[in-house]
Length: 338
Image 1 (cartoon, helix red, strand yellow):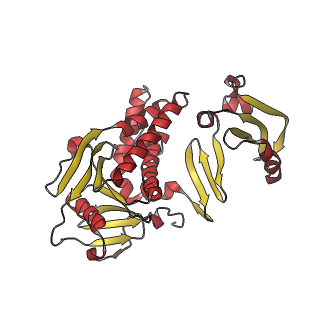
Image 2 (cartoon, rainbow, N blue to C red):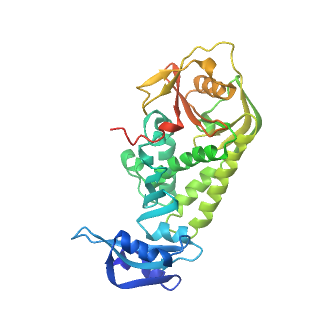
Image 3 (tube, rainbow, N blue to C red):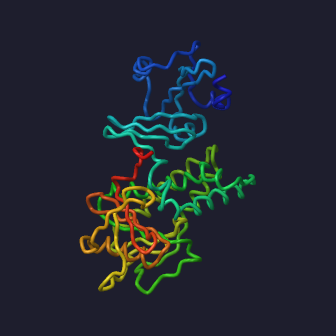
C-alpha cells in the first residue's frame, strides 16, 4: 500500500529502498534508533498513516543519492526536516506549513506576504502565474478562490518571501522597489535609473518550475531559480535601489528617488496585516534609503518597497489611502493573531 500511495514502484531499481517486513509505530525512540543509519543529505525515513486507527507508522528507508530534492518533491507528501540545532521545517506537498527556530513557532501562510495590504498588491500576479502555467499544460482553470490556494500561486509568494530573507542574510542594506508589470508602469520624473535593463529570468524559472512539477527536469529549474534570485538580491548592494515588476522582471538598478523639500503625507508603523492598527512615526526620523522608499510608494502607487538595513532589519512599505505604511520584519509572522 505505501508504495502505491507514494509511487515508489518506478524507483526501487534506481534508488536503494529498504522496506521493513513489519511496520513500526512512529515514536521518538524509533526515530532516535534509526538516526545513526541516516545521512541527512540523502536518506529519507518513510512514514505512513493508518486511516482506521489514525496512527503514524514507519515502513522503510530510502537512499536517494545525490538527487534528494527531486525525489522528496515527487514522492513525499509530509516532510519534517531539521536544518540545525533547534531549527525544524514542516512541509506538505512542497508547501511550508510551519517552522520552528530560536524557540519560536511560525506559520508562513499567516504572514504579511500571504494576506493583508501587501498581499493585495501581489495577488493578481500570483494568480497570473497560476493561469499561465495551467494554460501551458492544457489544464482547466478553476475559480479565483481555488487558484489562490494552488501550489503555483503560493510558490510565487514564497519566492517573494525568499527575496526578503536573502536581503536580511546579506546584511549590507539595500532597497527593492516593486511596481506593476512593465507594460503599465511609467517612470515618474522623481525617479532616475542609472542601470536600465529588462530581464524576466526569475518569472520564466517560476513558470518552468510549475510546468515541470513532479518531473525530474525540475531539479535544473530549481537550481536556476535559486541562482536567479540570488543574482537579483545581490544587485541591492549597488548604490541606489533595484527596480522590478511584480513578475520579478528586472527594470534596472542604481535607482535614485528625488526627495522633495517637504512631504504631503504621514508615515505609519503597522501592527496588523490590514493597517487597521498603526502608529505615526515622523518622517525626519528615517534615513535617506527609507525616505526614498516612502516617497516612491507615495508618488508611484500602487507599488511596494522592500528596505533592508545593514543590521538585517527589513521594512515592507506601501501606500494605503493618503498615507504611507510600513511593516517591520518582527511582524512578518502573525501566528498570534486570531
